[in-house]
Length: 209
Image (cartoon, rainbow, N blue to C red; front, side, top):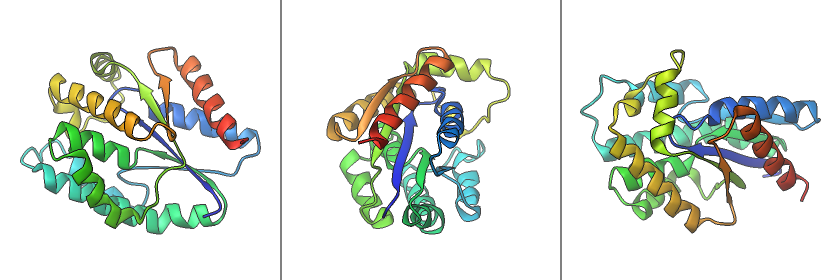
């Protein structure tokens, strides 16, 4: 793979999706060949799986089912969109990837971080991100942002209690310790302009190495 695979991670309300869009525009202006995408989704099949996973009516979905659906979506997304872009030398910016599965299903759902990681190896074929930005904000503040944003998509994960989101946050801390060379922390409890500046600086510094 000739390109660079950069992922954006964080709990609900961290603002990573908005920052990804803003950073992409700045990188485009700077002459970088950038492609953006998201998980679950990014392509037709994966978007349909996303609808199943995040449908607020699907409250009976069991943890392993959820994890397997994410992995299936991830596989098709990689094959159809990410792998071809990386082969073309593009910088791929992805809103969520495997770390989300480790934090949400592996830790918060109690399936086990190592177990969910092993499950995903079949899907990703050792395709790990080159760089991951973790947008760090306390879960309570993130959920307050969601409540204040009337235009934001409401999904099944938003219906989880605060404790679940706190578990997700704890899971991310463990994952950061497992992959310290790959994961860089961005303080998301700032103005959007400040977060954007920090995220862009982190990416550009990495790309210039």
